[in-house]
Length: 113
Length: 200
Image (cartoon, rainbow over all chains, first blue to last red; front, side, top):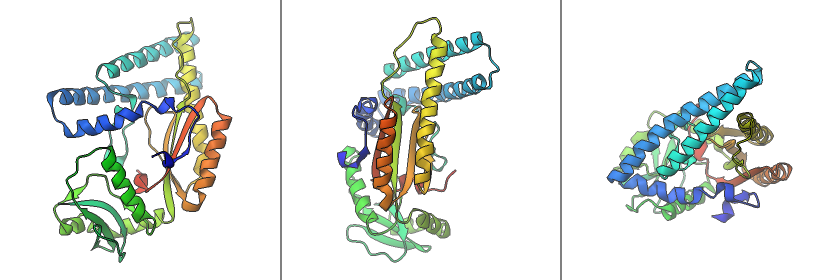
């Protein structure tokens, strides 16, 4: 596998969470036990929440760039998104999901996020 | 049952166990399904098979796990799409896919400072712009590209001329040197998985 790496940072830890994800995803794909079904449902719900969070954050960044928000409003927005981000991370951990899991492959339309 | 591997030019010859099923001006490459479980090793075997086939001819990889009852069903699956698939084959001819992912080198430490909200948004904006900056440098080096989205600052697939892969990778290494705050991972060459379909 390493011969497929054309260029990599000296520290690969930012990508380390992907290693267990593959085998985990493959296992879940073929095991329809109640626990994995529950996790699959949580994954779907959290993906939709993550989609909304990203859309709102992008909109907020655009408004900040446009200068239409006061410093107080920017601070409140930032704290809100930071808190949302933290809560999403907690929920992902609770269901054993990584950030990469919160996505949907829409086939020819590409990926949702 | 047979596994459908890829679409390629009409009239190609392949070695067993791969068979080339002609249909509508293209060939559908298939193998007998061995019923293996899906695990990382099976994925790598599939990858090696595709890479071997890719050395001699352009390929449009079919989604992994695509299984049909027989060769007639494989031919029927592409019937009516010959012209479109030939155009896609011409698009990837002589090129390979190179994947690039950008993450921030270390996660930002949690902050409780008075202006933490502003700092958070600033960091998000900086990461997003860094990803865009890397893409702007790499895009002109590729024949085509696909932004694959996700939470990372950049996750993209580039369709790079086979002979230009080394130069592309060298440019990524330069970018890594210029941006120690980022972790840039570049892998390949891959079959053109992200370019089998027309851009949406």
